[in-house]
Amino acid sequence: MESGDKVWEVFIQKKPGLAFKHVGSCHAYDKKMAIQNARDLYTRRGEGRALWVVPADAIVAVPLDDSEAFFDPGDDKVYRHATFYKTPDGVKYL
Amino acid sequence: MDKFEKAFNDIIEKDLKVEPRDWMPEKYRKTLIRQVSQHAHSEIIGMQPEGNWLLRAPSLRSKQVLLAKIQDEAGHGLYLYSVAETLGISRQEMNAQLHSGEAKYSSIFNYPTLTWADMGAVGWLVDGSAIVNQVSLQRTSYGPYARGMVRICKEESFHQRQGYEIMVKMAFGTPEQKEMAQDALNRFWEPSLMMFGPHDADSAHSSQSMAWKIKRESNDHLRQRFIDRTVPQAEYLGLTIPDPNIKWNEETGHYDHSPFNWDEFWNVVNGNGPCNQERLDHHKKALSDNTWVREAAAAYAVKTENVVA
Image 1 (spheres, helix red, strand yellow):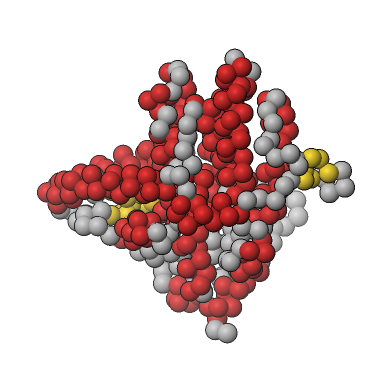
Image 2: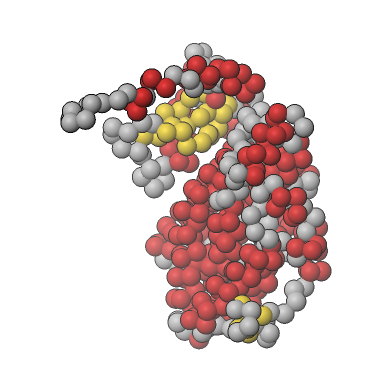
């Protein structure tokens, strides 16, 4: 990449109350330019009113090789789901 | 077969999406880089024939609309460059490949735009043909490419309608205007059909791309869909498709057409179209003229952005 040019990941909040969603990336040299470029590239038609840009190299991800072991603890705990429990007949609002 | 290759094959077979960090065969990656960068370059180079009419648009409204459309094309190019970057090629490398001729762009943009009616024909036929192709690519197996296509298709439908609106105005205008509309159709008809690429039998990359679900429908299939949609639109305009053999075929449920002039197609692909040199020279000049802006931006960032540097 050319000196100073960086990739930024872009997140948009569609409406207040909704989560920010990743929409893609853009190039820019600094924060201000990143947010302006992201606006021009991803919000030309009122796609949202709030915008985050994050330097792509600041994002930490789980290495692909590890993903199975990494997420394993979440796979075998059925008691974390409401459907695991029996509720007595006739009892409401549980 | 190791577990990564198996995981990749499963994704393809189950019609799921391959994501940037998934393992993929080297050839899959290369094929995608070639296709996506060519697609990106087409959007960027495609701004030139339209930019030609920006300062001569016949009304403020048409100028605004054309400007918005050209801005969209720049955006589409950038979405696609971002997609290609997730495959491990930099934007600089892509520009270098464009300039050396190693990477191509759609041949249609090597034809000149001679009259205002050409702005109509480009939107109606060129964007129309691109939409047929891109709608199909919304189901491509590479996730970032598929998502980019969804976004592009949403935006592109305005492009085709604005083109057709120009055609309507010209075709129902003065006899001179109608003649210009017919002339534009005459010049852009066959090049638009060529946008779908060579016949399936002559397409070097097609079968592997179909197997990997990078491409979802064949060149000939998509081309026929475009013809079937477009002929009635030309009839509404009272214009004549420049092919004496265009005729509805009850049996096949499609329009028949003459064989295409593939010599012309390959000639333009190989760099001998009317505007190949001009388009590339302009791109090189723009990139080189802007060097000082990039240098200044880099220097400014060093001064002001110690935190994220």
